[in-house]
Picture 1 (cartoon, rainbow, N blue to C red):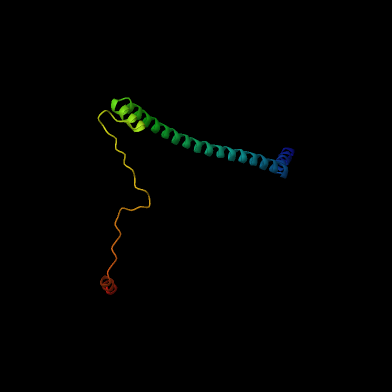
Picture 2 (picture 1 turned 120 degrees about the vertical axis):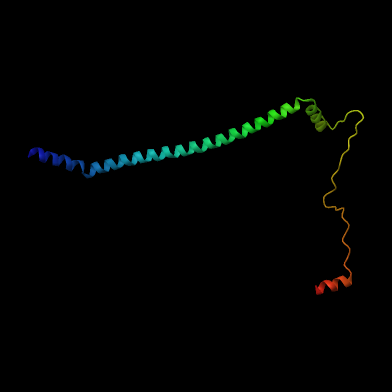
Length: 125
């Protein structure tokens, strides 16, 4: 009988308010830790995605630069680059510079004024 009463006391102490409050505090600590880890996981995943995108961009840029270097190693590439940068020509060649027209000026002729008879006909159409 004493065993039964002692077990009852232990069970009553286990389900008492202080023990439940302590368990709730421990539970809240675990929840807070789990929440912090999940936030760090999502941040790390976002940074990983950004890094992969940056890596892909840099690989594409590297490929473009390698193609450009390969082109510049050829005679035609060297000649084209020199002509583009320094505006030079070979012997016997001439250079033509095309100048854009000034903005705001038009080269079109003004539209003729409609005659009085055309205005009257347009009114009835």
